[in-house]
Amino acid sequence: MSQSQLSDLRNLLGVVLESNLFQQGKLVYSDLDESLESVGAFVARCPYTTKDDLARDRLENPPYGTNLSYPLSCYNRFHQTSGTKGEPMAWLDVAEDWDWMLGNWDQVLDAAGVSTGASCYFAFSFGPFLGFWTAFEAASKRGCHCIPGGGLRSEQRLRAILDHQVEYLFCTPTYALRLIEVAGQRGIDLTAASLRKIIVAGEPGGSLSGMRETISLGWGGAQVFDHYGMTEVGPVAYETPGGEGGLRILHESYLAEVVNPVGDEPVADGEEGELILTTLGRVGCPVLRYRTGDLVRPLRGEDHDGNPTFDLVGGILGRVDDMVVVRGVNLYPSSVDAIVRRFSEVSEYQVSIDKSSAMVELAMQVEATVEVAAAVEQALTEAFSLRISVKAVENGTLPRFEMKARRWTRSNIE
Image (tube, rainbow, N blue to C red; front, side):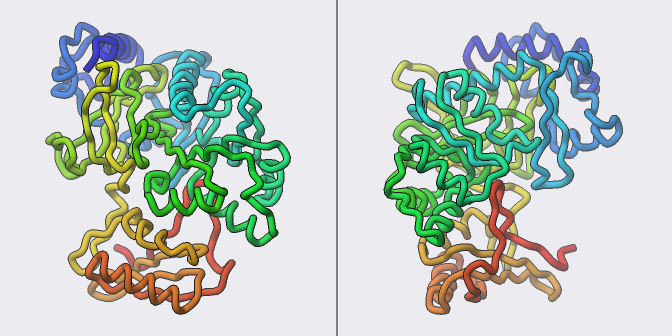
């Protein structure tokens, strides 16, 4: 931990212990204060925060909960979580915290090579979730030519990307693939695009080699650049310099830990565990030791200037609560996706999970030919030593997604 991290942590504790009812309730027996002597003392005394804790607080104290360090009149930004897991939660920010998040995105844009005057297209709905709002404002402040794509159809967005000679596209990995599909259907030549990089977020796919290659190929060789963040914490990490989709945490902005998903003990470098984050600069609505639910493999080191680094090898590997046990085999959606992405002929797919019988069963539908479906089934069997039925369906049969994809459906799960 750097001295600036310790200083920011002390400042954070000084504010929340004085005025934040939610944090006061969690830290009442912890013997923590702004005279904190080390990060080890913080980790030892501060309990975890979970999404359930935050959701319960909002239900009991609607609409914004008590995790507010300042009077409500001080907050000028509203966003909410996407609702991928449970009901959406409202999230408020004061101007200083919003500027802190824009500063984090500045580092991401630096790493991606986005310079002043660059043409940037933001292909998301500009809804209440945090999405790429901070990226849009950070790029705008940088002096980039920022083009919003909210409310437009996919074909309109494609035309705009070509007409305005866009250099940087901001979207989810799934939507980057969807745009490729629409371009093929409409006869739009993406090799004519001026696109240099596609900056993706919102899904683990940005770190999966198969998906990265498919996206890059479909967009005429444009480079995929991964980013990780969430509404509860803000912009957290960017693609490891020179790394094949790995992520580097913004070390001065977040205190990161990785622990056993079913316990408290920290995991060693290279071992899989759950990412824990403390926001060091988002004081108005902070999270302390937040269990993100994201599975990662940490690697701690130093950059070429000797500054400490905290990398996530392979990016976000999956979600703790997404794991499905099928006949004794642990399956994560990201692992299955990596197999499916080997087959460029698959336009889209969907997995159904069923527990109507004594055992959990998985079945998959793919928009592809019968022959390709059979090849996907064989590849899944070889990868997991488990037979998953794969059925071919017609193109356009399965749902499409602009933001986070929901390809796994459940039925009869207790």
